Image (cartoon, rainbow, N blue to C red; front, top):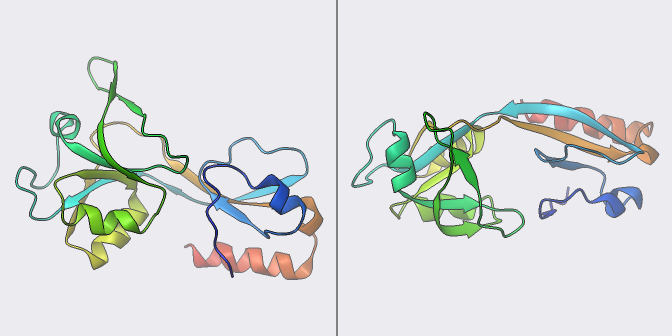
Length: 173
């Protein structure tokens, strides 16, 4: 098994040319013709911060959230995002001070710095198993992440590929 980043894009050519067997992510919404998908799981978003954070203890408020520095998981390298502030209904940006496309690096960073990381709940809870982090509900509304696997029609009926997809489906639960 080889795992490679797709930088936020469907690896269409690689799937069509059988270079990749599957693509797994939560951002493959509209698929071109000739592709199949299967839902793996839905995930909510939470916030992680270091356990000995000087200002935060337990659940965080929207004010604490927007007043804090943030780390950001960014697949495309962009550092712009907005959340709707409850009550006012206005878009409000976060103060992003660190960003990475790596899903492993942020655990080390936020466990030793005074910043928040908003991310998929399952991922953040895994971080907290190995690093001194608190994981709390996100104080702003974020759409759940629908993680799915995608494959090309050429491999749809292949017995080995079907077996592999079934194994992947079972592993994520």
